[in-house]
Image 1 (cartoon, helix red, strand yellow):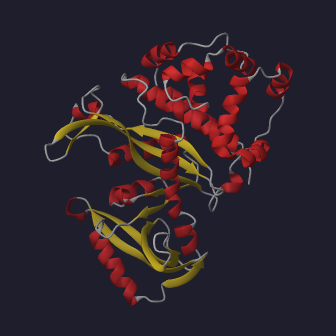
Image 2 (cartoon, helix red, strand yellow):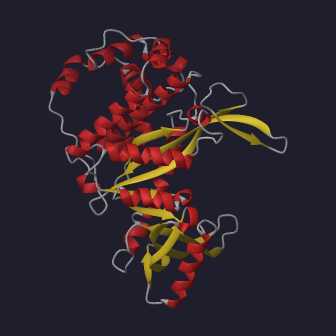
Image 3 (tube, helix red, strand yellow):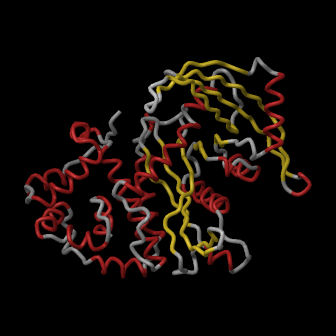
Length: 405
């Protein structure tokens, strides 16, 4: 398992590459100095055979235990938003093929000829800190097999959210949580889950999403001009408008009801076009459903400092896909092994994020950049034999983790 984590810490692109790089004599000797419990380095196929058989979810549980320990030791307390842990949730495709290699794959039909495709989809949750750090938290992998046994419908992102929310609540029952999600989750059942879990939330509201809520909110905003505020944010002028306590009914005969708070932010700024060299007036609009009543005192913080940090999870997914973590690489067509590799990747990503944001490495990361530092780390382990005495001294010291501000 240590070998499996290291293949993602050092960002190996494939099983073949990890065999070629990490098992080199110098690399192997340096790693065994860092991890004395390692008696030898396994072959990549050995790890694959192990991942075929183990309970893959236990790998993620190990990462979650590390996060719980960091939370318990209050390592993040200076980077919370209103004393809440901000969790961003979003789904993404992991990979697809034109043939069905596992019963758990989701199915779709593409193009005018309705060609069948089979794909893996994952709902991700990350912890977003106030200083911009994004830490992997949980992954909920959609699995068709479990649903086709009891219904003709496929597993879907919203069903996965209910499972993920249940896991987050059971894992962190007393944690003060705020969640930010896109417009797919702006619906009554999701709002109810958040309310029952005592979670704060900001959900993107689309004009064609909850149409009745949108119509009522925009209509009432015209009648309540006092519920508005202008704000200058950098070079952008923001106009906030909001309305609280809109009753939303859903379910059979509208038997369920939720009170929604809606806020809209209209933003204007000037931008110089590279193609023409001309300065143009730009405009955009955002809208959210809020888990707390909106007021002049909190509207900027909730919208700009909380809701708009949802894009952090999108950036994190792009990093995992395109900057060395091989999110979209299959690694194995055995479903259980594929899931195991996914969780090992998440641990490798978590360790790298903590490393490059730790105070002790801040100067080196500032000098080389994040990508340059990780390449330097790999080169240091593979290029020359490190000092055994110094490694032992560091390994046995009482290291105190402190994140860079």
